[in-house]
Length: 102
Image (cartoon, rainbow, N blue to C red; front, side):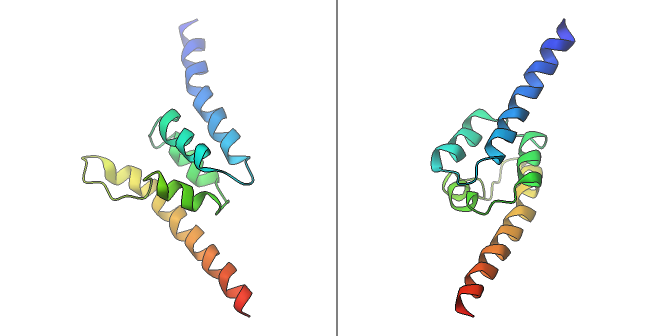
C-alpha cells in the first residue's frame, strides 16, 4: 500500500512532463506549469530536457527564468540539466535562420 502510494506520487509528475513534451506549440502557461508544478530536480527536469526536441519552448523557458545562472548551493547540477539542451536548441534556431538567408 505504501509502495503503491509512493509509486503513484512519483509517476504523476513524470506523466505531466510527458504531456508537456507532446505539445507541438507550447505557450507561456505551459512553461509556468513546468516551473511551478513539476518538482525541480534532476529526475523530472532531466527527463524534460533529455527528451525535448522542440525549440518552441526556448523563449518561454527563458522568460520563466530557467536559464538564469544561480549562485544557490547545489544549483550547478540543475544548470547542467538544461545547459546542453540550450546549446542544441540555439544551434537549431541558428541553422533555421541561416536556411532562410540561403
